[in-house]
Length: 197
Image 1 (cartoon, helix red, strand yellow):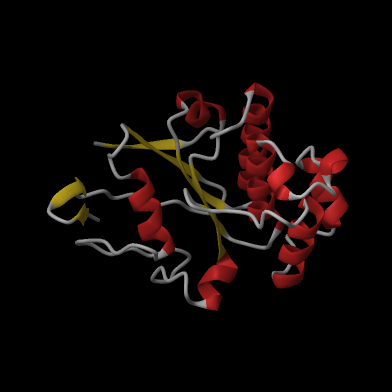
Image 2 (cartoon, one colour):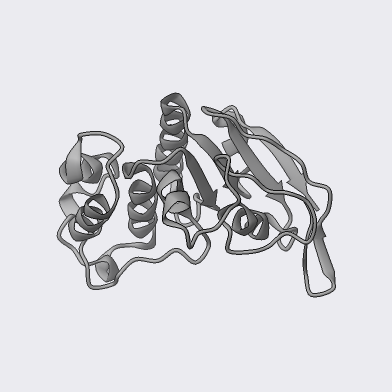
């Protein structure tokens, strides 16, 4: 596939496949098209040429069937400032089937947010908000997980947590695509790399 913004070609002839339990990390300099490529995989951006299939479907985030199979944390993913961590996960798990039976409390514990569960998102640190977004993405049922710079705002312990989260997703059989500047991430999760730019 190829993609351009205006007359500027971001990437050309990119080809890769990600099967169940596999992970691909997209890497490259700023502006090389990593976030754009994830947008193409989620259907928020169109490719200039080529064919994109995700979960056997043409990506279209407007379609409920597609959204039920593909979970995502993109560059512009956000939280409701006034909702607490507990309320965010409760809302999410009422809107989508859960991936397992651990419930809101179990997911809060996994994210390390159990002691901050009743703090509005606006009162959480940037790293805690990132953990909440990532936890929400994996708590709901999905076959494909798309993550744009998931390490952003995470400290060293948070990055270790993220590596464990991605490894758990692979063991669960999820196809994972990550755009990242964090070089060791691909090595630590055993991912294939696609270099852009």
